[in-house]
Image 1: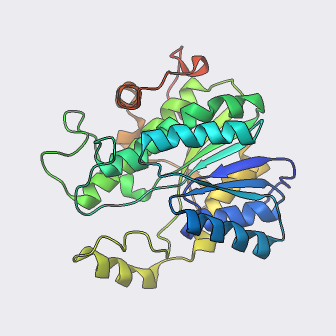
Image 2: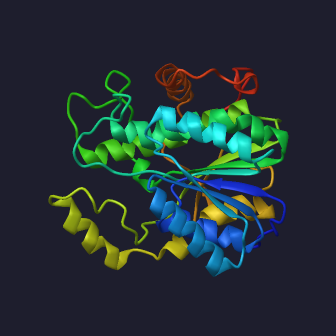
Image 3: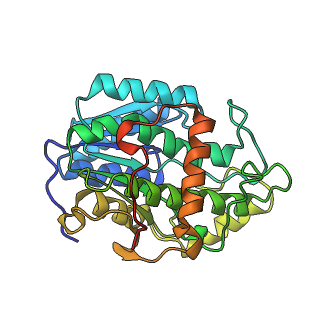
Length: 298
């Protein structure tokens, strides 16, 4: 993989106090980027910033505290980013989780949908002006091969009728792709690109705080998992490689564009999810993203 030096570039990575988010931050910092990371725990954010500065030798690493399942905290984070930096060159939506028991966010929204989809959607729209200010810029959405086989039920997006943690997680990863492809259509010829990726099954603490039978299964799967350094590779590739300059609306695995599921290319579902997401977040749609003549992704 050929990576471009990123001196002078500002990159925001959500959920970067652990796992692939942290490793993505480390590798991009080593390429010279100004790194902004987010996490929920203030102490962990502070410790991660210090550790990354020490391991990379870069002082250009800053932390922001935000729970991205909370719409108020997403708004506060976007405001803080606007105050801190004049332009954003890369946004990596990485924060996500799986919940084996149904939970709701502070906004009363099912937690998986609130964090894994609406968190990506809302933060991206709130920061789109900063990305536009310094186009060409890139948006990267961490999805998962778990999206395959999933479908969205628009009559029960919050899974109130029947909740199964893995199925709901898979639906959220499908939502990431529907969002990516719809955003790519709306950003055509804007100088901004958006792509999604599957990082691989990574050896992290992901999924190990749910308890019950699922917890030992995740522990068992760790033996076959790839290390976070390898899991971060495709995120780093999409953020830094000249090979994907101008490439948009694609799904990547192992640094290669591959087809995603047939369901992920349903334009009507993507547009419906977009409208529902606007309603659920209550944010104003930036003018640059308003519907125009669009074509389906290849």
